Length: 172
Image (cartoon, rainbow, N blue to C red; front, side, top):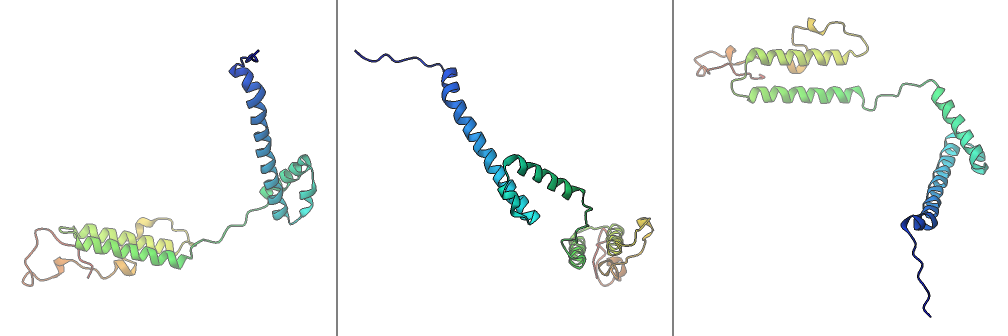
C-alpha cells in the first residue's frame, strides 16, 4: 500500500515553514545591528561596560548617549580646503574665462570688460570673507590681477591691422 500524499496549501506552507524562517532571519538582523550599535557606542564613549549589558540596557544607554551628543554645542568645523587653494583655483578659472573670451571671434569688448570686472569684484569679495560686503554693485573698476590691465583691438592703430567687423576681446 502506497503512502497517501497530503495536500498542503500555499497558506499552510507559509505559516508552517516560511513565516518562522523569515522571523529567524529578522531576529538575526536585529541582533547583528544591536551588536554593531553596542560596539559603536562603546568606542565613542570609551567605555566597554556597554558590551556586557543586555539588549534593553544597551539600547537605553545608546539612546541617552546619542541624546547627550546632540545637545552638545557644535564647534564649527575648519574649512576642508584652505582659502589659498580656493583663491588659486578661482584665479585659474578667471584666467580660463579670459582666454576663452580672447579666442572668441567677434567678442564684444564691453561685455568682456564687464565680465572681468565682475569676476574681479567677486574675487575681492571672497577674499574679504570675514568683512561683510553690503553692496557688490559698487565695484566698478577691475580689481583682481586677472581683470586689470586688459585692452582690446580698439586700442591698436588701424594701420597696424585691418579693422575687424566687430571688436575682439584680447587679454593683453
